Image (cartoon, rainbow, N blue to C red):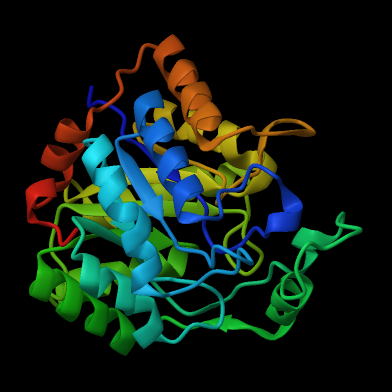
Length: 308
């Protein structure tokens, strides 16, 4: 039985500072939270950057460079940088940080989609920053752009240009077929690290039947050419990652995906979520992959070949 890779998405670009006091915002907070998550058992750290004063997602490579070297110096974890960026960013902006950092891994979304998080702030009565509510509200009329041309461009620049491999983010079953097409066209090559994502409005719903359906579809399309991982938004996070482990998959947790550790209780840190899923999986007799083992499973270039 293969060991389970735990990924941790530390801050993301969905949740805003008013939603939780524990969401890492500054480069210092992102670094400290990432290091703690790695120490808790995460072998892959998935990273976005935020304006240290307002917490708004930023594509600024200079901000990435304030925390990437520190994380690398303090852990052996694989660093995975977003190419999704933040809502409303252009593809050029989304690539700025990855191009400078030349990481082992980047996320890569497998299709354009409605991406509605307008209701995420329904319980907030007082906003810390003026940008937050409009940022969420605008997603009622927002399409997250990831065309085939965009995807080819990211693969050309980051994959062929930097030796970076990808976490292929699949928010719906059609995204799996998009990826299968790109594999057939030799735009991408295996082993594919496929992240199945559940519970985002505009993507596939967080129903247990969908979890099995996405797994079965990936098996039909990719056979032994892929490594499977699962994340689920909000309250579905722990249930879906636990089931993913049982079905032979890998898992992603982190405050990007859910701000909670249990019903009604905010997670105090990314490390708390990592420690919980690690404990659950180990109680089910699964072994957790180390960063070195994750690198071998995903055919990564190694931490000595990054740009930070």
